[in-house]
Length: 98
Image 1 (cartoon, rainbow, N blue to C red):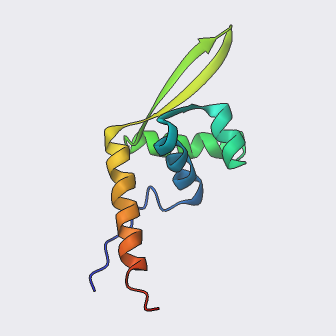
Image 2 (cartoon, rainbow, N blue to C red; image 1 turned 90 degrees about the vertical axis):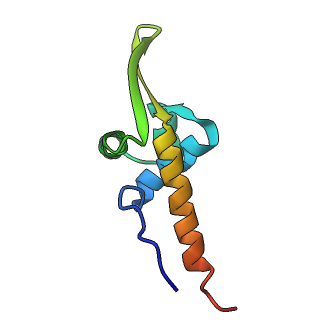
């Protein structure tokens, strides 16, 4: 059996959680991601930057009602990377004998 390498960018619990949320809804505000992942603001920011640097998401900083707002959007590259990651995990699980 030939095992595919797992994407190191996605092979992090918090980054995988962020990407899973974005796969479901396409884009999300920082506050929603923080709430859903139970991450600290600092750790979430670091992981979002890693996903942005990998071009898996885009980060839009704007103002809403005079308050700063950060929105993360899934990119086509990120969607493909996530699908490849899931396929790789499935190939690992497919080798398990019942």
